[in-house]
Image 1 (cartoon, rainbow, N blue to C red):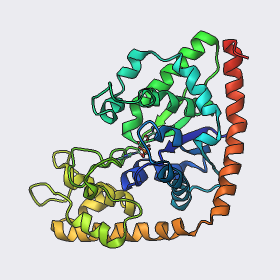
Image 2 (image 1 turned 60 degrees about the vertical axis):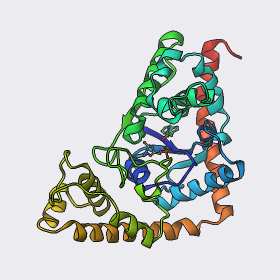
Image 3 (image 1 turned 90 degrees about the vertical axis):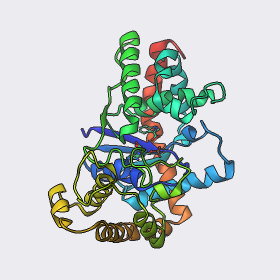
Length: 325
Ligand code: AMP
Ligand code: TRP
């Protein structure tokens, strides 16, 4: 039997090249070797205020993005979180297994709640528990995510181990899959901060749906480090970040990238990176437009049905072990 993968992204903001290189690209690469579940986590989205009309549209747009990026619905299960009510049900149970103290240690809550717990929603606080439910419902082996999700994966493992210990073996313990390169793509404007959907400075991110002129302009205006070398060097985070994007989009090895740009200036490097990025995104952007609404709905309802058949089995055994009928 194939091992299982589960991952997801929130249908908020615009997906950027960090989401793609840190997560989506790996989902596409891994999907043939694993039984894969890729979810659009709209219940996570409402932990922060959302405009209902926009959320609804973004949920379907994100499904289009998964498919255009190369997730094959014949091979992988693609579905919307709220279509499978088991996610919310298991989250309740796991809320009762989680400790306030361990959730208080989650750094993403501090970031997203802007340090103001008094004003943050309780949903934002228990966000990682819903994420644990997503993963554990599918008896997942591997969770391909970016570096920022590592702490949530550790919590997921802790909750699963605690439940198994207290109620008997129920959940498989998942491992994170964090890619060795690309797990944290940084802002083009502030290379010490990760590229983020919620960054107010739109010039810091290359969005997957940016048009060629916008991509080119953002790369041209990206900050650089002092010096002239175009090499991977931790002490020069801006150039290292740009070169990492080049490395991952071209598939050239790190050495090939460095020797390719040896003796060339930042101007040449940036125009080549812009060209590579534009050409990489072109077929993807074309595909995003191609999916008919009917086809999309068919894929999503088939996906939900498949997901539900697995999720309901897990929830049934959780309830029965806990004495919940
Ligand atoms: P989100 O859009 O926050 O739901 O994130 C979707 C996926 O993209 C998650 O697996 C994140 O870890 C990953 N991700 C988000 N930002 C970055 C980044 N700057 N670099 C690499 N991966 C990222
Ligand atoms: N929390 C993840 C993020 O912000 C999204 C997510 C929700 C997820 N549930 C998941 C990722 C389950 C992997 C597995 O990126």
